[in-house]
Image 1: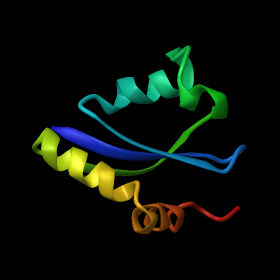
Image 2 (image 1 turned 30 degrees about the vertical axis):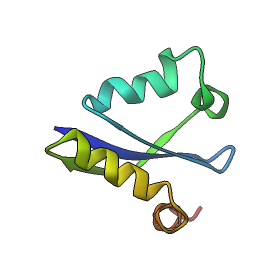
Image 3 (image 1 turned 60 degrees about the vertical axis):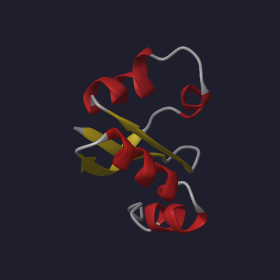
Image 4 (image 1 turned 90 degrees about the vertical axis):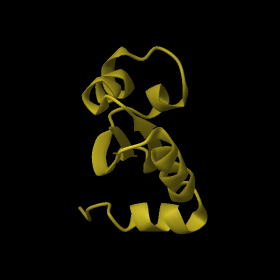
Length: 82
C-alpha cells in the first residue's frame, strides 16, 4: 500500500505533497527527524489529506496530478479556515 499525502504549514502558509509506503514514519521525518530538505524550513506540518493506492505507480501518478495547478487548488480548498 502507498499513501499520497498533503501537509500544510499554517505558520508559513505552505503545502507539501508527497507519497510513501509508511505514512507515520514519514510524518515523523517531516516534523522531527529530518535534518535537510525543503520541509524542515516550514515546520510544524499538519496532515490535511491522504489517499491510499495499491501500486506505487498509481500513487506517483496521483502525486504528480496533485502538484499541478488544479491539484493544488483542490488541496488548498481542504485547508481549514481559522
